[in-house]
Image 1 (tube, rainbow, N blue to C red):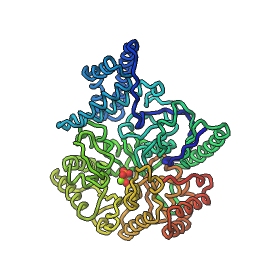
Image 2: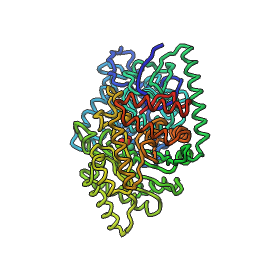
Image 3: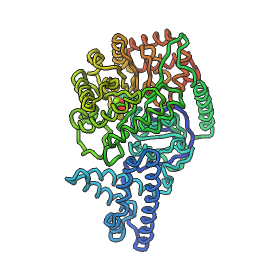
Image 4: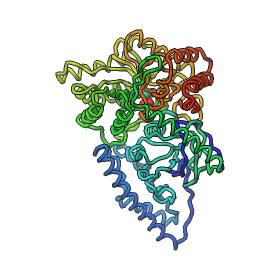
Length: 581
Ligand code: PEP
Ligand code: MG
């Protein structure tokens, strides 16, 4: 038995078997092979090529049917490499002439090709470098006994252990087929957390060297409330975890049963619950969880895995498809927030020392890629003529950038002969936007508070930094004071304000936000049931008192204690879980 401590990034409890994805940072050791073993090693290579090809073809077909042809293009480059005779020869030579073991030869050759591609003048070739690394991972996975399982065919008690969840990985997961996720890096608002919450599975991040400490098929207990992972647990620990899981599942069921109820506090205050979605098929969860619409559609996921930007028609079809499935409920299209850790492969890579503070969000749209921005705007404007589609800009800094973006929308609408533009909102996620909130409100029809980025910028803590994982918390009084200032300004201006950062998805923190004055919360749909249960069992007066005390607190720890106590008093069955944001 061994206890590993990490950071909880998605709530719940899981028991299951480890499935290790990737090799983390580990370099494969060179292990010289005897001449007599060469043919076997080459045969293993061809078997791995063949099974990788089958896996890629299946994946390509599935993604094409679920997400469209262009999303499936990412796999074409991988398939082309598999048929490239030079690539195959390079690896065979390392085995035949250097007597390298196959895994080492694959790592050497693919690292070398990726490095050369990355140095190429042609941007198209440079982009293929990431494909080569992806393929390396797939081939090595095929060769490792433990990783023969395809990601899309995991069993329901699989606990995925990986260094980090990459945007392209998101395409491979079948919801339902995963009990839990453990990652070495990635914060509460990173891709792993967003994926885990979208799937409703517990997840823990920040387990250093998890991919090396945990062996394939090891029995694991994952506590998504505390961040504790137990490797090869004792029978008594298994029993305790089972009881906690049963209890958690029962309260989730209770929460799910209450989903048809309107979200109204005991003293009659209505709160609208909306969904954050990133992939179009997630939209079905909006109706499943009786939500009031999509408060945040992270459109960059439409671009990330692709070889070319989706056309205006494709984006228009996608927005209309989502809006139609919402049956008249609103869809807030957030324009692509490229930069930071989200960079489409069809754009020339950009090297910035601080990508989160670089050419990102609206700055990217206005400075670096007006074409992409204009195409997306036109698609959204056209969709808004038929459906309740609204536009929101990420990483707004203040009056100037917001006004420029709005002028682009007006100009596009005018050139198409469209008189009415859709409602326009600003995502408040930079400290500058907090201090410019009055001017921003004058220009906006609505605003939404992005607590994920706002927290990282207010506290100067990288939201994905493993070493700072405990310092990154929305419950820091400075973050709450910033949030409160924005809510008060919006209420005074009579403009709708939503919170769409992950903070809204935590039952305790959601209550605190309502106490601060917000009446619209947008979150991963899987978390909505617990938020609804907590809010419908609360009184606004109690939540306001909680908010008042939180704003006057001196530390995040003190606020966390207040929130947990408040939730325990309201709903003891939910309150025992740690706050995950
Ligand atoms: C946020 O920053 O809170 C937000 C909603 O945007 P994202 O998590 O996509 O950066
Ligand atoms: Mg953000």
